[in-house]
Image (tube, rainbow, N blue to C red):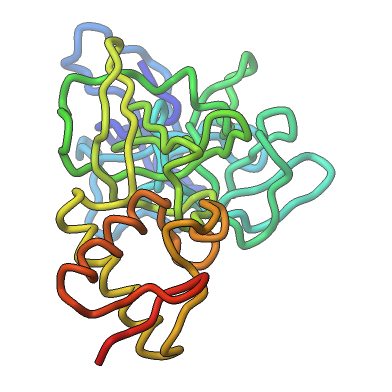
Length: 281
């Protein structure tokens, strides 16, 4: 059985003027007599009838099932980050490594996409046996027992929620969320992030943070404050400053800011002045 959107092994059945036709291995129990074309431009001189070739099956510009020796950047059921190369009245078109670009229909977009942008999509088949991309991947991600509290993870940002925070596909398989109050740096849709697990829900969904463990992050935060003090001499922020002002200026929470101040005080590097802090040489 031919598998649209997947890589499979097929056998060369015959040569024609337009290419070679491939069939399923005759030895397979579910073998059928249908064939699929591998176009001339991909036929190698050393190919012979009976050879087994590994190909990817998709629909060509005429909507005909076609084989290619090229390897796409995404296969059926996979979630990948792909670049937008064109947008027209039909939808957006993505570079997935084949000559014919992959369609991302308007009704499968979570937001308006633009040329040059990267989007996280899943490859699916519609009710007319055509391949298409969808940004509606939330329901296709799962929980996991692969990670525990504190574990490092890698994921791709695929959506931002005003209420929850930033949604991340961990390993392109699992639910990940950076809570709104825990995001202290700018991240873009399609960006790959390295984070650590801060909690695991009973259903295996992961809350993650881009900040390091407290002791490691404290070293970084102290360095940020020292650099600011060395540049300005005095800074008009202290433990009474508003959390939103601290976040905007230093990309850290007020709690992290106060921890860094405490470290610097113990080191004898700072003193408090009216409405701010001064560096002690």
